[in-house]
Length: 155
Image (cartoon, rainbow, N blue to C red; front, side):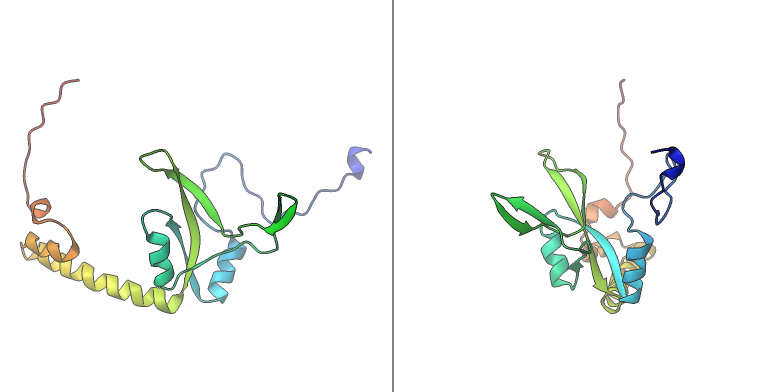
């Protein structure tokens, strides 16, 4: 077969090699689906109880399209289709996995408004010279105080 007879496969999008890219983004097709479904995506690390908390808050897993199967012990089983990435390691060296999850835009906007209410209270406490007001945001009083510490540095 000569080189002239070989046809190129159709590419959906060319990705330049060696150019800095964001690693935790979904492709444009997936983002279009989120927009049409009026959902907001978010990567959530599987640490502590964050996945369970996210599910209680209205988040759901984003899955690959199509059916993926794997052969295990002579039986065909559906493969985990949840979109996930390894994002680091915990203190003991066990990999931390982040899952792509989504929430309806309505819930997302409500959550943002609720979060902003807390941020306003913290800002007011700081501007008012009352770092103790940060306790409402879970920050210990001693961390809100201004202090200077000397550190002896010896290389």
